[in-house]
Length: 451
Image (tube, rainbow, N blue to C red; front, side, top):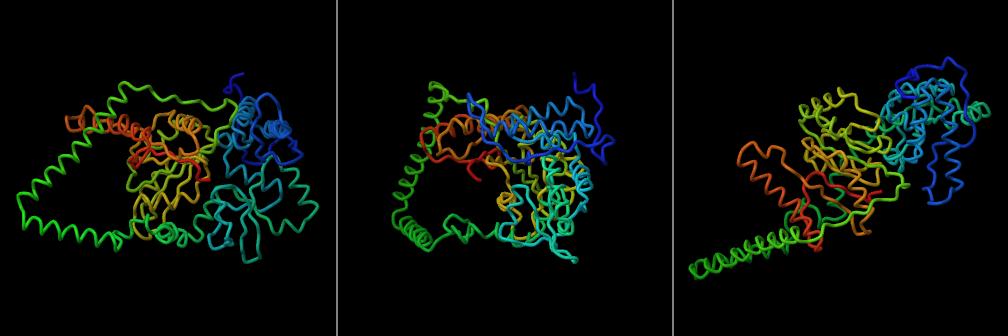
């Protein structure tokens, strides 16, 4: 039966039909990876949990074809039916968690004040995964939770057995909890993002332009150069001419070798990952500033990426004072996989600082960096994942080839496109194959091993 043949409605209040509450352990637990040729106990438990979730959501009024499709996606992605329905936007998260709160008889919070958050050493972990949040309120401490459909009956039984818990629990959606954590102690977090590299690895930080030894050598070379020009002007300029000629000739020779290798060498093979392996969570970091006009096209391009929405973590990063870009993002009705991260107004308003600030909330084991003007190929994330799977442990970063879109506008843009094509499709692959240092562009980079 086609999905369009059924009527679906959002969970706005208690379902008209009696709810058949599920039982057993929480279905949100992540099962082990499937083992080829045999079914593990964890795999069977996960299937049983998904079956219970299917019955639960069908009883709530979600169309059966949509629930079955969500169950198949959950089995492939190692998620839950609940997560897939939310990712497919068949359930509105805020309305859904409000409904769960009413089922449990607990207060619901659609906003958590940052000053109410109890700061612990582990609080920022909630930026990367869902969990309970401790709150300090005038009436006493409370814990904000995000219940799951798979554990609703267990939660109700626990609350009935311990009524005092109702005074210490409130319900909030995971997005509401993350917003509160982002806003709490944001000044300390942005200072940490700004100064951590200089404090921990000062030699790798651009804050210190020159060390004492570097300054001494540079001054010595400058003095020697001035002395040589004054004493032997002709010989000095001749030697400088020869050195610069050799330097630029070496660059040209390197590019010719790379071109010959690309023309006559065998193309690298890419091994596909095992068909039963679930896709990891992929975090996309997109730093924006004064890009309100680009937002509709950017959101459409990111939405076109071929990756399960339930395994996607998209972070649009904006400066706190960039009200126009933030308003343009909010007007796009972003999906539950998207999040707007506002960077406090502190220090330099640079892209590296913004990316470093948002990185502490990255939920994925794979991370990609994009710009507002990027138009990534729909299959780029899957291709990057396949390449990571085929590579060894030393492979930590991939650079997607960049292409100029306005190649036919004029001769200057044509030369620019030709240069980019030679750099990203010939020279950089050659440098990577030969183990030489490679230059990375400022966008379309993919990283792994961050979590």
